[in-house]
Length: 150
Image 1 (cartoon, rainbow, N blue to C red):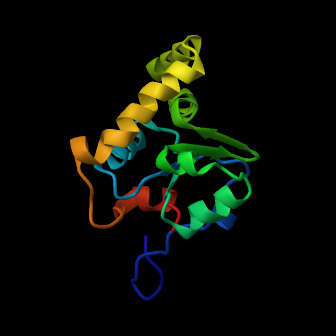
Image 2 (image 1 turned 60 degrees about the vertical axis):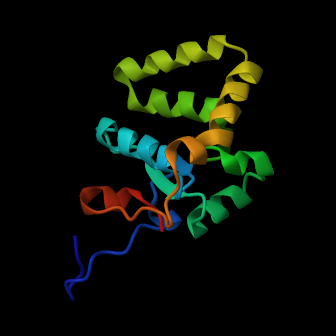
């Protein structure tokens, strides 16, 4: 997509989102987190999920309404309207949006949140060492660009 000057359309803003659209916030410089987003995009066949890096202005605006703790900023965060999910709850909820076989992730709710989040925190604390880190946030292209908030 491009405007009349042939320039690519700007990324959507929060005002462009459908009401209560689920927005996945992720660490934009983390290779694991970027891989998670790359996993989600082709599996979200309905195009329901929107994305923003935690380092973006869009994430700052969304999180201002939800007052997450500092620990939550080391996490995948899912914002849906007035609700905010972090860590393992965010991952399970995102899987639910994908539908199909991914809804089986809801079985994870049978494991106490404290244990799920402890495992999540362990991986999060080691993600840069294990998977590496980018110098800058990824820049989406093509059809996917319209689902990434600037």
